[in-house]
Length: 454
Image (cartoon, rainbow, N blue to C red):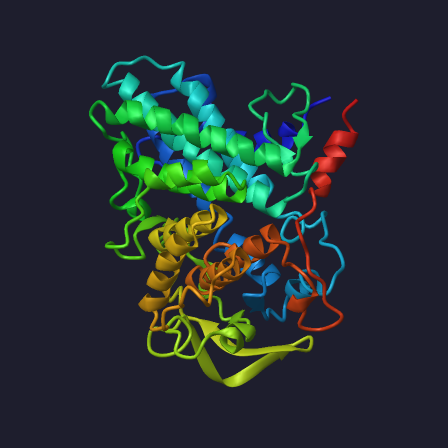
């Protein structure tokens, strides 16, 4: 009996492309990589991993929007599809049989992980000629990049299937007819992500020690980070985030030191998923008029917070209120004004708040206060005194509040943060008929494939 990878491999193997001279990066030739890898195929597939990584981020039912609903950052008032409320807020469980809702964020990241593994295997089957093949330095650069993107995809799995025993499989570089990779818990998945990022760092460092170039284009989302030496800083930023999620505070501090954190640089500095309105490209659909901001964002904000009030606000208040299934909002986000607006992967502002969290967990409240007040000052808020935040719990609450508004509607941070500090509770409910979901279920298609396997 074929493994769970049969249906994922079928997707990847269907991505055929006859003309490698004019590649369609949304339809890449992974079948060619398996049978006869060439330099153009490998370079196109490398860029294609960025296409795969962004594929589930910015749709109406994408990662930002759906985790935004669960974390009470946003609503989707799509009258043609009530499931954005009926399932995501009103149902006691998410539906594992619905690939667009409860079964979401599984096939797409695992397909991209599979594609990355195919690419890495193909590198072993091509010569090192700099014209027709891939040099050793280029190979290191490609593997370092591919493993970093795999880590991002696995992180989507870990954050949505956040379960002690049933999070997701990690030993997935298997042939379709191999035995099933076991599903493991979140701790093992997160540890695997850290291992991937660490291995990728070694490969990137090896590439940086030579010509320090990627042999393919990373695109506008990685402006300033498009060389292995610079991309390593993005890798370390992601490593710090994951290590904070794992509560490995000392290791997280070390990783952060290798990142691009810098209070003297713009808070927008970082890596992004790039989108476009051009023919054949993928637009950012977070511009949808159905995407409303949760009214508690404004109600809970400190007066004068420039992230919420004033000309630079992330919200705009409408003259009319929209109501659907007894919940209402008159506020929209200003974060994504057009279909070619990028979505952050990780940026400087998050790193500064991660540093504050690390310092707090290491009982250095004074250092944490410096970073907290730096962020507060950016948005016109008065500094906190040490007496205001004189315990670890108070400081963490303040950091989570700053993360709520600084990282608003960028990647499900609010839902993730509340869960990791055991604050996903009934206080979030808008109505007594609503529910707070801790995680997504394993998709029914995955469970059915496992039950069919002897």
